[in-house]
Image (cartoon, rainbow, N blue to C red; front, side, top):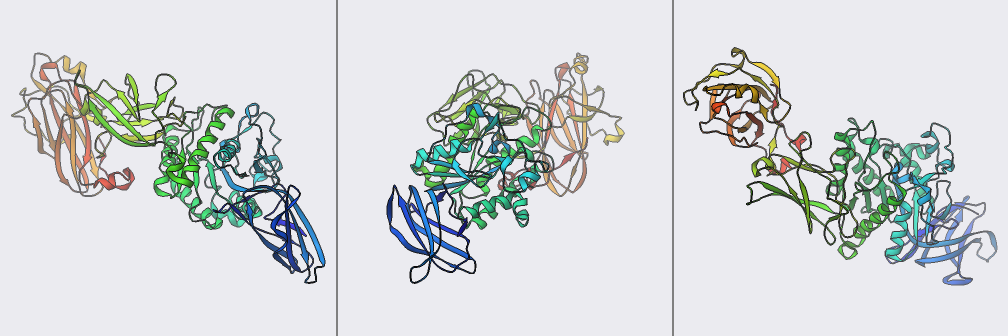
Length: 626
């Protein structure tokens, strides 16, 4: 008899919900008959396994099922093939079997482990790993021993040459996760190592399963089946390789496909999955746009994939430009274990990972300015920071905008700004902005806030970015309040010059200061295109009298406009616009030399709120052509 799957020396067998074994096994043989088993623990036979029939051998194969061993162990299992008369035809044995929970570890290098080995955890007997050479043993980093991997894909991905055994780095979150789960459950834990550094979601495509061990998914599935085709769940850390212009937009779709395929192949429609939100990177070639996109998609995965949780890692230290350090890999492993416990057992196991709840503006009566209140759910105790709280950025959208303090209060971060409420409501807030932010806010359980993409501060609206490029005129004489000012003609007839402004506030300060003592106007003009019929509104900020025409039709006039300008002083309805190009012309009175410039952005007003919340890709918007 030669066992090929389901029972191996030192294996951890997945328990059922009742805490008992239900291990299928099989292998090759040259005889036919009944398969019987005797199970011993500490030298004593475990009832009822005293040469109990557990399977059948025929046609060169045998298969069986070992049901009813209580979680724990270790057990020694003897197998025999016998005839009806009891004659023993063949035999084999498996030593040191544990019954508990088994986990798939998948992803790329941060799951594989590149933290310093000097900080690895000491192995404990109850937590074991199925190493990549198809051997079970006590879980001690590096558990992803790629240099000895059985599956060809791990050689192919290394350029066809087996890598040298690691001597300096190799710590990942898996061992700490397993030890955390053991402390939480009291039952043995098994870790099936399947990750490989530098791999992308395209390389993990379940469709490549047809290649067997020459694909990542096929290799993972082979290892799953070799260990009895039963696991408790999956822990996943991947995404760095997908932070590219081509791959980032497909990340959620590919993760959904991966989890769906695993649940089908693993025979568990609700297989629990815990994902790590990628941490930081401090070197080329990643861009902030695509790195932050991956992070935001990961923290939203639970909205589109049932029974999935995402654990933040944005606050953890690195051992190089992209890999989490050994000590903080242990912190991450404990976070993963906690999140998995909540997936398995609900609120009685604790709180899910921290999630963004709401963003609101709170006016400060003492100075007429405003604070931004960012509230979170699932906070244990209260939020705190080891030093001055950091990690938030205000965006317009555009470059990060400074503020002077972050105050932490229970489950809220209160961002003190130097902006009035209307200006603040025109902006966005982000946590973990860029590739290498400094984020240090966590709860009493040591869990980080999640990184998230820019969130609208006011009521979500379908808005363009602020217009920063206009066709502009020189100073022209006009009535100071612009009451009698008529539409001066199409943009092409005004002799306007194109100008790009460095900021969202399109200021002409030096020019306007020279006009003091005179009454006059400066024109700002732009063209925009509507891809379909839509209702549009111009959101204006200004510090002097202003008049606005859309396609030659007057749509707004404020003769009393004065400084200071706000990002949202007024809203001008442009009406229902047809598909195609349109013109917008703004006349700004010089306010006796005290007017400096304008703000302008466009809003589409006929998009329902539910579609706005799906994101900009869910609806068409006017595009500014200048």
